[in-house]
Amino acid sequence: MPGPSPGGSPEREAGARGPPQGPGRSRRVRFLLPHTAIPLPSVRQEERLFYRRLEALVALGPGGFGPLFAADGWSDLTEDRLLRKRVMQDGQGGPRPQPGQEVSVKVLGALEDGGLVERDPRLTFVPGHGDVVQALELGVPTMQPGEVSFFLAAFPYGYGRPGREPDVPPEAPLLFEVTLLEVRDGPDPQPLPPADRLLLGAQRRERGNFHFTRGDFAAALHSYRLALRALDGPASAPPGPQEEEELREQRVKCLNNCAAAEMKLERADEALASCEAALSISPDNGRALLRRGQLLAQQGRDAEAMLVLRRALELDPASKVIHAELSQLAKRRSPPASAAPQESLHGPVPPPSPGYVAAQAVGAGSRPGPARPRMALTTVRPRRPPAPPAAEEEA
Image (tube, rainbow, N blue to C red):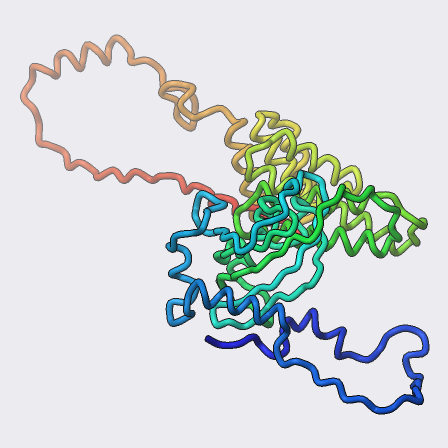
């Protein structure tokens, strides 16, 4: 079976090999001690145990993790059977993590070829906050302190269809070995400097975009709301002018993303509230105006929708989506052509005169003349406007 990749995760190893950071990084300190050569092991002890446990389960061959998804001895954590758990070492009998509690875990994660792509001796997070992959979000709350378990995750519960550059290929299943080290009450929100609030908000919004792209709109909405909470959280220092503008832009993006997810979940009232919150910050935001107009039209508030969409069209005159929405509204508000019977372009057709009726009765008994050639009638159907494309979430 292939051994672990020599370098491990690039993100986790880069800091250890890079130059020292901070003040005095260019200084060299010489200690007057005898030179001692300390041999470094080629494979860490925890990695050896990981591969021994993995070898005891299955010998990785051309089928990769495929046989494990149908193997006995695993419990399914999801209905689609794409996230499975196998306990390798029982816990100490303590309580499992509860919602809102913070956990610390040791994580090793491998690809089907045996290469390690995750190695974190102490990863701390709050399950449900969207800061880690779904395999850990859903798996760790099922564990007890001290427990060691494998989590077999198909790509929807790992890094999704695109994977993670440069080490996780697209649609790659992953096998995680997780040790639950500690469970404690969640930390109270601490005042953060504006730069940290922006960073945390961006991370959670990106996690929401990942869920949105995967079609998990409920998880996406949860991540977007957590991003808003981070942006609006307590600050340790007042933001500067540039940071204040960035905070406003990030709030608008998160609110627009909330509206997109809420529309997918058919929560029209919540989506409308998100659009109005975004417009209270940025009144000329075209995306929020478009979605608000669409939602008002769905609720039958055509006059309000028309005003909002016309404003959106002023900001983006070339938008085909806005043109299509306005066209549909105009057709819905105009009376149908069949409302007035027998109307022509010049007005209603008058009833036939009595003389005409009598002549028709006399002519019915006379000898018919030569038949006139009949003209073929071609029905011209009006072209329907193209359906507007689905509005995408903010980047």
